[in-house]
Length: 352
Image (cartoon, rainbow, N blue to C red):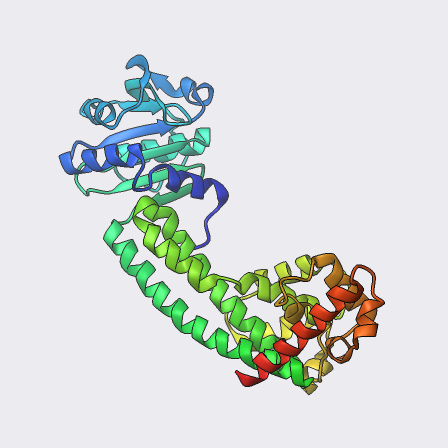
């Protein structure tokens, strides 16, 4: 599933499994009655209504199902809590182009384009549910089909997570030994991009799965845990420009297409490295944000002071208790704790 627009996500969530509307739609599909349902701003829909009868009653799946047995369209409130009209004829502008061949689907498409509201067409013969809103169209897929695709994507995610963890451990060790190259940094950021890209694909499946995707959502959370944060901290460590790191990181992810060669060039340039520096695979030194973040007892403001004072991670690792004590916000007790934490961190990283 391609990345969805915001309104498309809302539309799919409206009919996802676990919602009352989806329960009604499934009943209509099983009964093969077909239906045309419009959801949204009544003032925008009213000019297209003809005939039928007003209801203004509370929504329930059974009520919608019974009303669908009539030929006309059904109008629901924007929040789907009220059934406003039933058995109405919709009269959209016939000059609005439609790619649909069936009368119900063509009407649905034209109404959606003319009003910008969500229109649902349930096919009487094909057992399909099609969503229309503005120029967007989406045919809902079978839950089992989506579950199979989501499970397959999770398996891919597990493999990428294993590779990511290996690169993470390698980067940790290289930073402790002060032997990081630009290639290693970009390789790690590439693994971050791969994980987040597949994770986004799974998130799209979850939108359509609704309540059926809870287990997959838990698995996704486990596999993605800590990855976005590690990526941002890596950018804070190695981006040449001391500016908006969030924006640099966002640009990296927005430019991620999967291919490492193109990503390598783009990532280097976004973080401020010249083409020659990228090609020469220069040695780079981290500021220390990423490894310092592993010492959970260090507040963010103290971490900023540490990096600002020492400039680079090697100097932080080599600092004495006296050096640490002199930094604003640390003091003797915290200095000792930081020094002990840094020593443990170095040993644990190199043992792994």
